[in-house]
Every structure is written in structure tokens, then in C-alpha cells.
Length: 387
Image 1: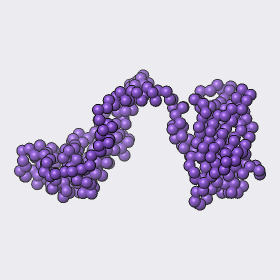
Image 2 (image 1 turned 180 degrees about the vertical axis):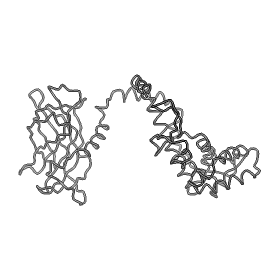
Image 3 (image 1 turned 45 degrees about the vertical axis):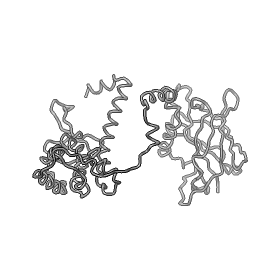
Image 4 (image 1 turned 90 degrees about the horizontal axis):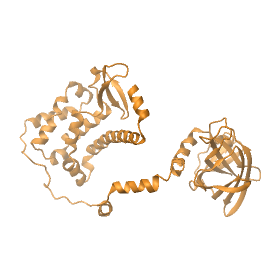
């Protein structure tokens, strides 16, 4: 364990990316076995071209045999507490758990996916009619016969049919070499446009160009898509409805809000400057029932007007210009934020007897700022209207 911790601390960025890539590829391959099982289960419903690829071109049955013979979801390693060797199995396609040697024959989800695929590929009528056997395929399939014991049949009773099929196959005479291809005329649609676009392309050069021209010039803090995803999760954590006095959603059809644009202005060097444009996420809003009446609210997209995200000082002096039905409305704000609360802090602009529209802004303390001069970043925004 100490060696692993030291390796993780000393590895370079390239090594970390390679480790993450290897982990992602492994998890993707494990999930692919589940997808393959679904395809085998519904093979009769697939087009002839897909059936041919599964049975002949890619030969799913021959690919599954090594996965059962040498399972990649079972491993043996040294224990972190001693030099003793322990067995581990992959559970729920994500977690490695220690397994006692006496329980190694217990089938996990990943192992069951392979056996279910074998059952459909050997016992369904479509596969028996179209799968052309030869000596090599017969020998590979019969490698699985030794795993069909009473413990396995008790857990997966349908494997009784697979065992009977293999017993029959052991007595069957098959051709020396036969692939089954060319037994029938197969006509299918070809993606000519996709092939013409992807043909003769140097994908490594394209990847280097994209990295140098697109991704290298944009950090995570500047990536608007990442910020949008972060806003979705932060919205679930914080109670935005508290600004509406314990608001409760009302089960009514969504309605549109006529806001087309809102501009947030902040004081910079003793002058007011436009810092954010706010536009609705979608045309529909949600009606909220509060102690102060009904309001319809919609979330706003944040469009920073600077190259880097604009940071606000503790003392807020803002103005919001709303464009509603081609009419403009101004909402002022003069307040201060707290540096002690690490959660999203919400402020409102408007919401008086004369202001039917008001904006809710969520701020968070920006990381890496000086303690004596804390700066805040705008994370979320909502617009509401009394109805």
C-alpha cells in the first residue's frame, strides 16, 4: 500500500492520464460484455447483416470462451496487511471485493453475462442454423465443458441445455475447415458518406491539432460546458427556494416567461461595466407557490463578457437590465456577501411592490484568493415573475 501511495504521488501528468485511460478502457470492456449479452439474447430480432457479424465476422462465441477460461474480473494479489495472497472479484462492474477461496465458484454479474451469451449462441434455433462448425470452433467450445459442474448448474440452471449441447457436440463429426461465410447472398446498406469522411484520415494528427488549437487554450475554469454541469449539481445541493419563502412546486403545466435578455453590471474602477449576459435556459418556466403568492421561475444561462470569469468583491453594487417583451427594466442591488459561509450565497435584485420581476443570483467564494480580500464568482441565476 505504501508503494502504491508513493507511486501515485510521484507519477507525472502523462502517467496519471494513462492510468485513467487504462481504468476507463477496462470498465468500458466490462460493460461491453453486458451489451453483447443483450445482442445475443435478441439475435432473432436483428437484421441478417447484424446476425452475420455476430456469428461469423466477429464470432462472439469464440470471443467469450477466453473470458470464461481466464476471467479478467478475478484477480489474485498480496494482502495490504501481510504477505498472504488473497482472491478478489469484481462486483457490480465497479468494486473489487475480497473473496474466500471456498467462494470462488460463486458467479458474479460479469461472469453470468458471459454464460447467458453462451446459452443463446448455442441453444437458439437461429444460431444452430447459421453457425457453421469446424474442428477449431468445436475444440474451443468444448473448453467450457469442464466448468459445467453441479455448483454452476445450481446457480444458473439454464446451463443444463448448454451442457447437453456440448455432450452432443463432442460426439459430432464436423468439417476440417468451414467458416460459413458465403453460404448465402447478403445485401446490406453501406454508410458511404461516413466512410468517405473517415477514409484515409490521420487521426493522431487530427487529435494533436485539436489539442493545440482548442483544448490547450481553455482551462476548466473557462470551460462554459463544465461550469454548466457544475451549476446543475450545485443547484441540487443548495436550497434556492428559500429565497421565495419556503416555496413549493405546484403541479401545473410549464409556462413561458417573456424574458429575452438580462445584463448584469458591476462597479469597476468607479464606473459601471457590463460583466454578464443572462439568457433563459429554455422557453418554459415553473410555477412556484410561496407565502408571498405564486411566482413563475426559470433558470438563466451565464455568459461572461470577459476572457476569464469575472470575480466580484465582498461589497456588491450591481445593476440588472431586463429586456421583457421589448421593454427594458432596471433592478439595482447594494449588499455585502459573507466569507464565512462556504455554500452558495443568494441575493435578490428587485421584488418590491412595483417590481413584478426579480432576479436571484448565487455567489460562491473563489478559491485561491487572498484571505484579506475575498472574491466571489457568480455560479447560478434565476428570474421570477409574480402571477
